[in-house]
Image (tube, rainbow, N blue to C red; front, side, top):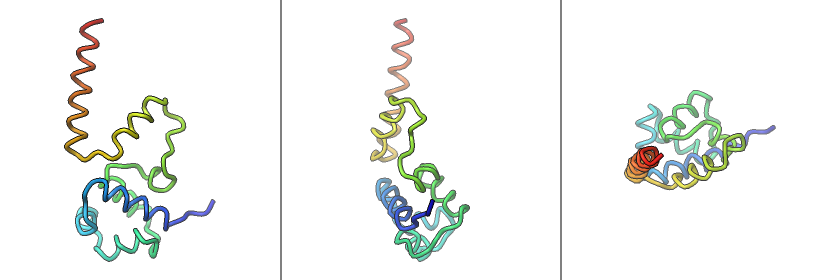
Length: 112
């Protein structure tokens, strides 16, 4: 299996943009240079495993999703559906959905 660093870079960029984050912000939070992040996103540089882990953690995603794309095959369908629902949400939307899910779960359990 060949690793396509250009596709990995595209996934990193898409994830960063979904979080309304600039390259400079990602670079700062991962302790990398702006130029290095830019080169990773364009596929001009092959990041180390450590760099990919820092990026994944900063973007709130998994290394697996950056390297292989959406790989939820072993997870229940409802979990995959919920993850996909949240994929394009910002932090504020995540928090609101989580708070509502907690409240709904409590309501369901109280009625049981």
